[in-house]
Amino acid sequence: MEKKLSSLLVLFIILFAVLPFSAGAINEENSLIHTSSGNAFGGGDNLRIDQDIQGDLVLGGSSLEINGNVMDDFIGAGGELIVNGDVSGNIMAAGGIIRVNGDVGGDLVVAGGQIFLSQDSTVEGDILLAGGEATLNGVVNGDGSVSAGTLRTGENFELKGDLELEAENYPSDLEDDVGGNLNITTTRAQDQYAGASEGFSIFSFILGLLAALALGFILIYTFPVFVTGLAEVVRFSTLKAGLVGFLLLIFVPVLSVILLITVFGWSLSILLILLLALALLIATVPVKLLAGAVIYNKIFKKEASKMIYYLVGAVIFAIVYEIPYLGWLIQFIALLLGLGAIGIWFAGKAKSES
Image (cartoon, rainbow, N blue to C red):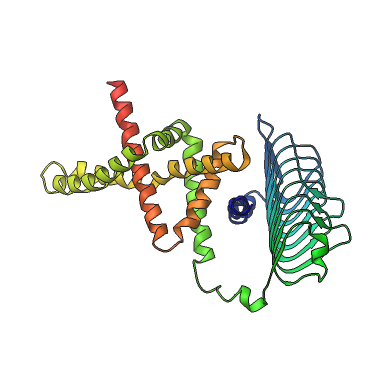
């Protein structure tokens, strides 16, 4: 369960970092877009969804209320989220106040200031909650992992699996409501913020992630065949792509310097440097796309759009990049793989057209 919930927590970070910003771009008017596959995407200041959604529902905004049923996953972030309808898949949400009043067919992954699980709600899978206050009064058929300042439970609360809890305050009779093993770590308020000054800056992390997402979305939307082709090269020719990327990273700058000192080669030298800079800028996009697809498919056992895959991959890489030493190494390897894939892809195109 721990690995599964950790992976789902990564998806939550996507919501927390991305959706509030993307919603802000359209908050002057509520918007909901339906795709041919049954998925729906939307956002706004006060968005209310009364109809059923046949696929996934992805929302961002100040106030979100879902009254219809969602036949697949619900992903949302905003100031206040109220889920009154049933969600057949997973719920992944982040916000100030989050209320789940309907049934959840999969896992419930939530982070927020206040989290509520209604007495009328049943979660068929696991729960992963992180927040200031969590109030649980429904039934959870799976395991639980809860990190909160205060945990409150109602008369109808029941968790049939194991529960791992980190909290400052929690009910003294909690063990009576847990069917499996109960593991409690008591925290203090100062302990939760002792390391706040250490690690990476949340602000710079979000800015970097948003920049990576913007670049990736533009490329995938504008050149889907190109980006997908690069990802396939990385998947099936990983070692070759890494080697070609390493050679290009060394050979192109050296060749540019040589051309720069010649009489007629300076313009070609500048062109090569610009092309290398552009290639390095987009090199990690196909790697993140591939990684996101592999991880998403393993977790949810289903297909999704390239945009969703890239969301997953981009946020995972953004987090890994913050790990000292290892993050730099992973970034360098991803850069080499992507750069090599670009070289191999263009070489293949040139060969097929000759």
